[in-house]
Amino acid sequence: MIRAIVIGSLVVFTLGSVVAYRLYNKPHRSVEKESPYASMSAYELFSAFETNEAEANIRYLDKVIEVDGTVSEILSNQDGESVLLLKTGDPLFGISCTIKGGIANVKPGMPVTVKGICTGYLSDVVLTDGLLVGN
View 1 (cartoon, rainbow, N blue to C red):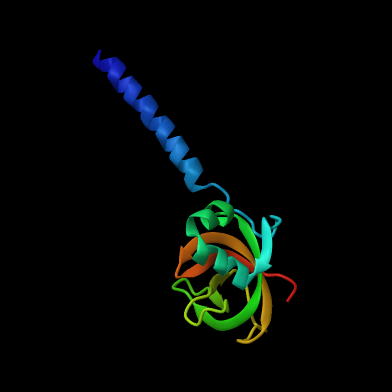
View 2: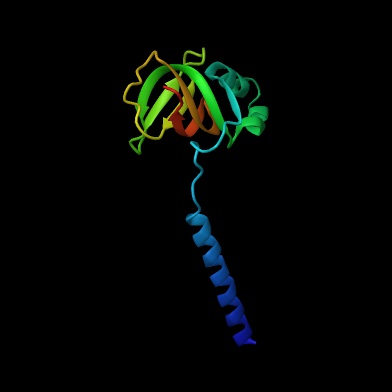
């Protein structure tokens, strides 16, 4: 009886370890290779979340979105990545786009198109793993 419990526990532990290892080492999504689910202006995306966050989450959350807008600010996050804040018509909040790679020629006031994964609404609408498209 004890032998069966020990063997069963080892089998469960081994299977759990294999699953955990595969999930941890799963390849990340490539925004560059994915076609956008939607293309819109920064104002339209922000308005969708501001008007009805639940519906916007259903439509845009965890999807690749292409957003056109004007850069209001350029920041850096705790990982040293560049973050572009796009204007939305709201004086306090905008679209926060974490950019992978360089943004050497981008300056506040410039129009840009950013493609990234929408991760939700936290005062700003957040796009991660972004890249500049055609700039």
